[in-house]
Image (cartoon, rainbow, N blue to C red; front, side, top):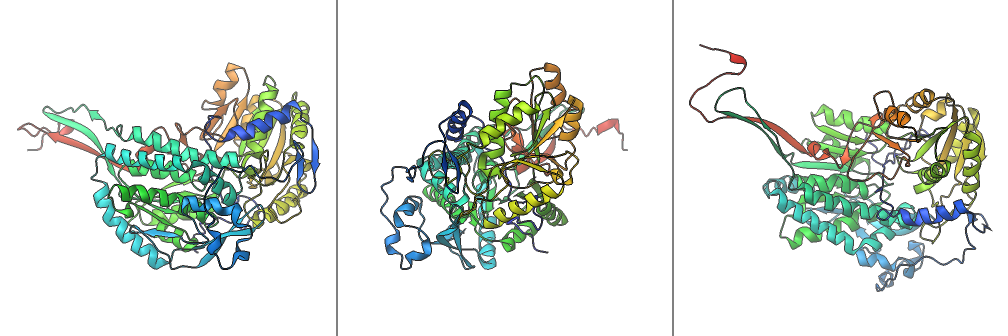
Length: 591
């Protein structure tokens, strides 16, 4: 069975297009726009109803929040303009990041080529084509892997600080195109512009982090029990790291992996999500320019747009010691089994079913703001999205009432429009899954408090939804990849922890409380069983400095900060005898 790297699940729930986080500092991660609008919601704004779209903070004037662009239109050269689904002016900024109406989606051996199927990438706000992309063929893949294997012999011998300087230059290249890339990401993926720019900023931050890391890939010196002997650890590159990313964070996950993999001396083979090929191409063009400027082999960074066939090839390829995969638990298990069968290693970032716990002593205003961002941000398509809200019975009604008021004021619409908080789901199939999921939820006793409907029209818009349901309902254990929030009631801290830990996934969790005993129990051995355990902040919006990842069905992988770099290197324990005798360990006398 081919590995479906698109991660479209047969089930309505546990949609595999996962990923996860955005940088935590509000000033850096693109959350400013979201929180500005959120604050206006919470303090009460003058509302007007926007037909077929939802509630608006102000009467929409139909104008986009345009970035100041001066690029010459490239669509004037297009013969079939009607295929592009929009005016040339709307997309003219794409030429600033090397994109045209027809793009080659495979960068191998330092060259752009592609011999696979031609696909159109769509704008999820209206499902109209943006541009065409030629995907990679298996012949392209093999050419790329042969060149990459040769380039690895060169790259791993470059001193780590020099490799760090190359990554620094990549970060500078991304900085120079930050607004354009962020706008493309919003256009192609569907997240609001503030989040699109924030995601690109996260890759830049990962470049900065990795530059410093390049001078700190330290091993240990270990005392030896034998005279005139020294023991030490050496860390060396793996060679090639495969990175398979998902649609919801089409460039951030690359940053978590590629920046570290490169400074650790590895070449990178990237397969981007099939439905976001333009961001894959635009990012790769900037990386390629840096490599060329430094007279380095382009094959150090290989990128391919494509579907399951390419992803399966990466999983099976013995030339790739480590495969990082972001997607559903179901598909991630398939990848893990395939890679393990050839004795390779996997780094998995899979499904999340994240809970926020609000205790009786919580700051309700702080909690409500956090829940709104965690549940509505990215249209519920983060793997760290809050999907379960656990409320102490004493504050249940108050929190729900405040959230219902806030939800009705969320502006749904074009992610590039100023003031939009909720953009579209990524694909029409995602919208259908939302509708099917709501029916399943109702059949299991779920009571819709607000939302629960798809928005009529050409885009993939749905209403942000809050559902009252029992924690015992089977549907609560699964992940519906949409802005659907379950509200659950509990009586004690111990009951809240039990509910939090009752699902198969173990990615992110958060508690809102002021009591030290609750805080330290929550982060301790009898508390949350997740890889991310927060206090008084949302489940999403993680900072790059910490290791990102989860437990159980989330996969156990760790990316980004802390000591995640160790997964991208092989460790050797070295014992050196600098004397003339041969004493044996454990005092053994052998003859």
